[in-house]
Image (cartoon, rainbow, N blue to C red; front, side, top):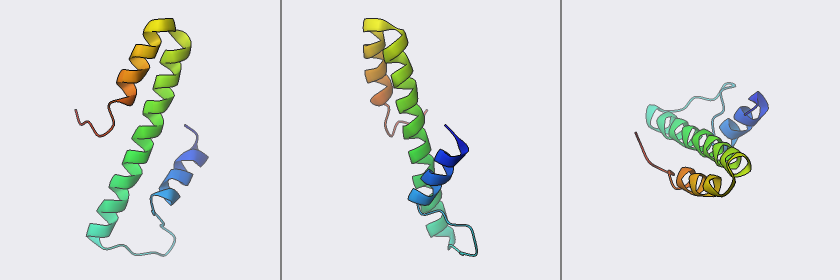
Length: 73
């Protein structure tokens, strides 16, 4: 993931830092949204690697990676 992609995800999540003040609750909500976007992007990148590098079993791995949405370890 590039820095530009991360910045774009931060904007998409509503994270603006140039002179904008967020209350604690709103700030936390925005950060959680941002973290979820980053995690989803990384999961998808990993799933694509699995699909392209590991043949048939890679498809199964990719499905398992994509199914992790919202899981916490």
